[in-house]
Length: 208
Image 1: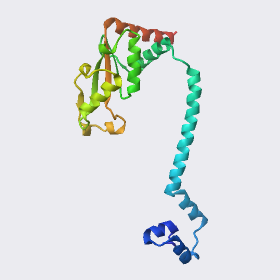
Image 2: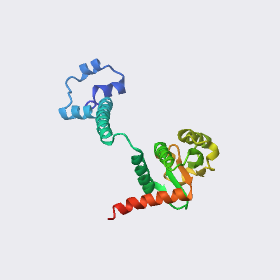
Image 3: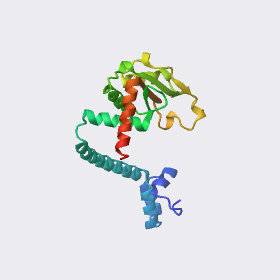
Image 4: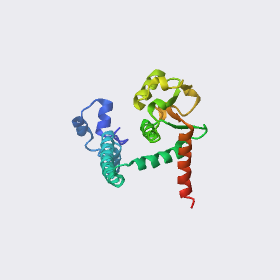
């Protein structure tokens, strides 16, 4: 085992012999510097320590970036929220239903922002409808309760959830869709027109 480049720890694990005993047996069979370096580089504890150190450095760096960018952004005004919401809907919103404005996402924080944005148009939570896209091996009631609590919208405003067989698609809640997909809809012809014209104004501003 030693001639194959195994360390004392590896041999000890195989034979159950103490390192001091192995040292007495194998003192004439030292490992090469290259092999020692290999063992050190692939030591699980060392790798874990290295990973934790890198993670700590990354988190410290990101905290600094967060402080820096928060100063650049400052306090968001009503106008900032209004424009940000228009861009969000322009990029991610549903545009196939007349007189309805909807946003679909897996991120509850994004949908919470969207609901706050709708308030700028006089749309309240009681005016909203919610639809969920879930998978067959999920706990449906649990997910409905999750979204109801997260968005502060009662279950009575939820439409029947769409349930998809988990095995029929490579995209499942196991790889990024942990709570399913949620759609929040608001209806109103005048409101719908304001959103469309707001987006058109932004688009025209960059077309001149």
